[in-house]
Amino acid sequence: MVNIYFATNRELSGIESTGILNDTFTFTDKSKDYSDINLRFGKADVDLNEDIINIDILPDIMPKYAENKITNYNDLSSTKIFEEIYESMNNDKKDTIIYFHGFNTSFKDSLITGAKIKKAISNINSKNKSNYEPNVFVFTWPSNAKLLDYLQDRHDAKTSGYAFARGLAKLKNFINTKNANCGQKIHLITHSMGAYALRNTILSLKEIPETFTGRIFEEILMFAADEDRDSFEDDNKLASLPEYAQRITIYFNNKDLALGIGSRFAKFNGERLGNDGTKSNNIDRKIVLVDVTNVVDKTSEELIRHNYIFENKIINDAYQVLIGTQTSLIKKTRDYSEHDKKFILK
Image 1: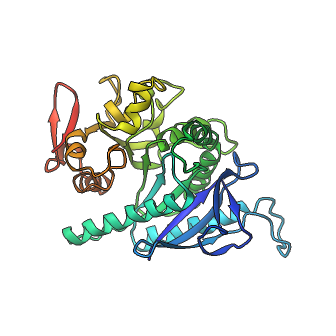
Image 2: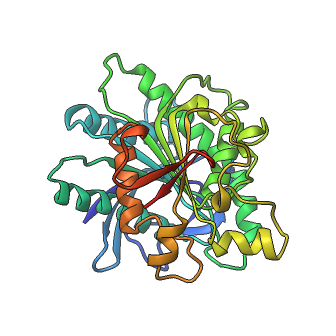
């Protein structure tokens, strides 16, 4: 079993609060009421071999037996999860990775991917004889899990931004209440449309009632980002993202058909960040571009070459980023192109 945490603004199907995830007990592809405000928090034990997930959902409504006057029990549920993660970070010296999934992803799929991230890191640890074992926390928004529902997913990714901003603010405020710094780091990984959900989360931070300032992430890793190439040049997109991180690593693939079909063939979207990297080379020095085209083109088993995060050479490069290796010292997996101002995965 791989243990992960999650927060979601999906609608709960079923009346149980714990149990085995199945067709009658799950989170749907619909937003819950007031989904732009509230999140449900929980934990999941994922059996990747048997495809079984046992989840424990924390309540988000005020229980009748509560004596104290708390108007939003969601605050208690988030605090309980954050306390558990903090204890792990403080006592066990574990970092925490937050994961934003892409489109065409069910609730179950998002948890499985989160568990695979944790498992992949564990496998690298075994090979390297290291002990880097981060927590994984999945932000799962109501993607429809249908390939043809791209527009609906894009809408849901956008409207989920406010809820996720509230979640990040709760996390930041919780951290601020702790007197001692545990010394561990919080990282963020996005895949595909998760980058667009992140954009709307960052933009919503300016609108939420909670005060949110300062850096919260050490590393942000963006894979196959379904975002505009000029997003880091536009204040209405991701221009402010470097304020919240120490380093941002963008993995992109020129032959990503999932992104390329919409931008190059159907003319649906403009050029994508996940296809060609940033539009300008004159970008914040915190942003690192990594071209994975040669690696994915030669090793990917899937035709569209979009879900490549777990390919050996790529996940091993990402591992070096997560453990804090300086950009200039990640040499075994990359070459640098001075002309293009980008790294090329070997």
